[in-house]
Image (cartoon, rainbow, N blue to C red; front, side, top):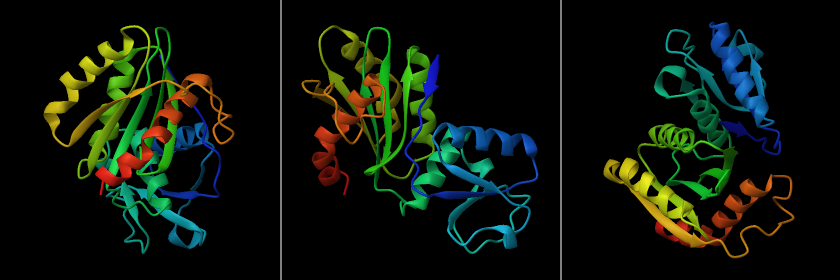
Length: 218
């Protein structure tokens, strides 16, 4: 079982130009969980000037003059919103993406990044759901470096998770696993205090590793 968390709104507008109402509903629901504004339009003329990206389908493709994502090209609605959000912040082709994980006995906090742009955070109580989400995330970013940060603390949870991730992802190429001490990762930070403790810890692990990631991800 997993629970998505909201991102702070940054006046980002994602446009939707789709004829399938079920897909529209699912994308809007995913975006709302993150406090991201999505505007469904029926024509290019209805699209606001501050929309940086639009999601459409190949059958509905209107040859837009702004970046376009096709629903057929991405593995999930989460991946669609991830890509739209990072493109809106100028990460059309991010050099690297990162999944930062704070393992726990009952709950595991996780944060997903495109370079230094936070895309979403989630809390998992099911390791398989976490692995599936990471798989979708990496499949949506096939042409860049991929990092997994795992907090290394008390207990065997981090070792078990590292083993599971190694078995599933290291053979896919361009994936590097980094273990980081969890010392101070659970401390509250004024910039991420709105997130639950498990997710805040995952964010702090990324903050601790950010400089190294930027250097190695070039």
